[in-house]
Amino acid sequence: MLKYRTFDLSLNLDMVLSHYRVEHPKVRYVQVGAFDGVSGDPIYPLIERHALQGIVIEPQKDAFERLKTNYARFPHFHFVNAAIADHDGCSTLFRIRPGARGPEWLQQIASFDRNVLMWHAHMVPDLESMIEIEEVRCLTFETLFKEMGVDYVDLLQIDAEGRDAEILRLFDIPGRKPAVVRFEHKHLSIADHEKSIGLLVGQGYRIAASGSDTLAYRVTAML
Image (cartoon, rainbow, N blue to C red; front, top):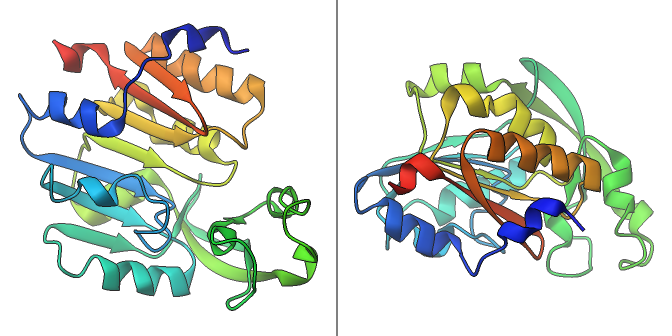
């Protein structure tokens, strides 16, 4: 049991954004691993309610095209077909081939680590035969912010199939200090989850960790 789970509260992203927007009506977020922007997405239902502006990032080309279509009616969005990494360039992404049959979440699993996909093998018969590779663009957060012409975001949302702790570190929380951070922890080791929470707590965030995700809200943003 993570010691920081003593902070676990009945909070959700909607509640946190409602509180934050009292003093900050315009909220800009960056979402790493947006997939199609709708399927199992925690932010999509909140876009209109909170007048959100976003930079949404998705490396899989087919999912990226659906993402743009699904978000076509929303203003103030930027779409980036890439993966976040510690370098600019290209990398090999392991993904599920289009059209493969399985659970509704099957197409959402993609990773630079093939083992992350195979972790689901007990739930998906013949999963190994469904895996293919796709060469994807990689870029750093520094390059992303430069290309988008922004110097801050209020909310960082991460769903990166096991790379969440790494991406959280690459974002530079101490330097950029987003008011809200949300990331998936179900594929993280206890040690990596502890380290991620320790980083956030050390920077003044309160933590609500439950289910598959961790939600962090910076204390100074609450004052």
